[in-house]
Image (cartoon, rainbow, N blue to C red):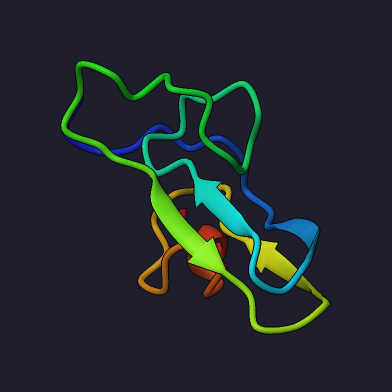
Length: 79
């Protein structure tokens, strides 16, 4: 697999906590979107760690083509 699987065409809202690690799925194969479940193993993809500095809701990319990984930048609108 050379390009990521499109897991969805809308961002996924996630309430995040400060200091907690969130491992974003970069391959698009995880069954626990938007987060990694290890499905990337054996591919060229690796999950991306994200840590928030505050309690808030963020929108994680589900199309896996964002230029601002792991957060949505609207790229899904062009796919």
